[in-house]
Length: 403
Image (cartoon, rainbow, N blue to C red):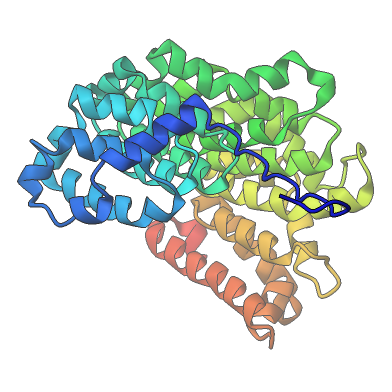
């Protein structure tokens, strides 16, 4: 008891009660064998009598447990036997309800690593769709953690290696909706611009489209490529750079080249390369020029003589490219060299580049770059020269090339 005149010491504040979820997690952790102990068990035991404890350890885990849990999953789900176990209903449910929605980034990431092992076959992708795992992976493309997002993107790119597996993804309506949700949100609010999450999804579909014509057709069918046009023709100059990256990917496959041509993108690129672009501020147009040339380089290399006729013979691209090779040409020299090399891959392009070089003699900018003290410039110039030699050898039977 306090004496008269003395102040009483304050009573200790009672502890706040644990929430139901927190109490449940604490109880689970106290009853689940720690990952360090599970890791010592034989793999056959982990996959059979201890499987329930293994899966329960995911929910009970925290950030400190993540490294051990990663090793534990590698042990339990490694090899063909582990792959078969991944297909089981119990593991699929643990992935969907626990691992892929875990608060810890590392646990979400390693769960995606194991899901990717089921990305190659259409039957496995359909299984992931039926269990709800596929939809959750689609949601993770927009995850706040960039590392987790990249793992999710990697899963869908792996699916796209097989046209059948990609079709299984896009035929699963909930997963398709989740995957395209950022694009749909951007399309619903054109005045709001193209948000970062939509650009992330757009980049994913660009990467998928570049795999082949069948994949490109499915991306076009999904409507994802429409956002690329909106981004390119919008007012945000930085977003236009993202669209150029997607266009460069599309230019690698015939179906993508056709799409670019049909939507007027090739004409837009040639106009900007010639300096005819008047929209937007000039400094940003100058920043975009290297990306424009890189995109045209992909187009020229993949498109052959038809692309050369469009871009060089009638599109007036050769002059702007050559001006960038001059000492005072600007900051797009390396990208211009890449475009010249792309043109030199085809018969007609090789002829035009050789004629342009010959007309300048020793003072030609390309000839000067071959003797440059700038190592980067010299590498680019020699890449052009090497491609010209290769094209001349390939088309040696053609008298016009030989001359």
